[in-house]
Length: 196
Length: 196
Image 1 (cartoon, rainbow over the protein chains, first blue to last red):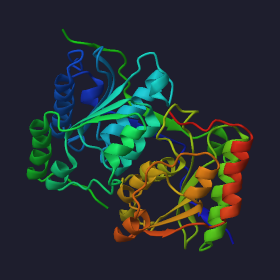
Image 2 (image 1 turned 30 degrees about the vertical axis):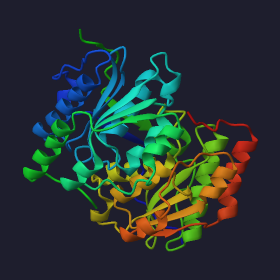
Image 3 (image 1 turned 90 degrees about the horizontal axis):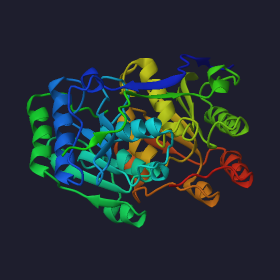
């Protein structure tokens, strides 16, 4: 006896929240200004909370020195019923599909930087080497996220070294206080901190 | 001076290959039969290679004891320009969107099992605890994948224990020879082993 096929979904589709699709936030930042790019990511993370469209996380793929924004992503886990729709995965996937390659190192806009309002969880950390970004810049740290009640998963103990060995530069703690304030405010407001 | 917004992609969209959408493979397996479920995953991984639609990896989300298939995913990285479109992420995301929840533990079909033709890379390993599956069953091992030339990334040294602590059972090496043969054949045929 064979079993049954309950559903047969044919594609994964994850739209961004409407406020982000409709350009309600100016996505420009000052070329070469790491803090200004992080300020933009933090602004997006706060918008995602204020619009109740997802968790307090946002990420961008940019050419930092030229001030070019390739993509902007926010956490879409609950809204889109997809546990992997973290901000970093969204930003990386959006950039790759927009540029027509899974490898961001080969685009004419390289080198590209992932700007994330918070350090990556275990999944997003694992995703970074596959994506072709040359640099990762984070705001809030893992400790900040965990202090606010979020689960970041098990990262290898030498994760910063692991990125470096793959030619990916890591900078963390940029505008840390502003970035972690969004996490704390979200938790204080009693919004969902999901964890199966 | 502010920089520029080069593209403004609005959604991530990852369709499955047409051969999988069009039910060219019978997705049924015998209820309770772990090997039969793995045989199905291996068959899908080989189809993905034969149709030249992606890497030699496939995964399923199933209720193992009842023989219910919720979703089937294959590696879509190159075809869909998305480095996170690994088979496991596809299968988990497809199942979640089909069932309308990011948390597979809360569906009436739980407990659910992720069947993967190969042990998860660092990204997919990190994704598993967020998805709500109760069990992970793998075919080929990390060593098999690396021997064939694939990069699995840095997993925490205690990854099996890490899953167990989160209430997720891991079984690996099921039909290992058949599963790893697909990886070896893919590599021998000189098909892309991508790595930025």
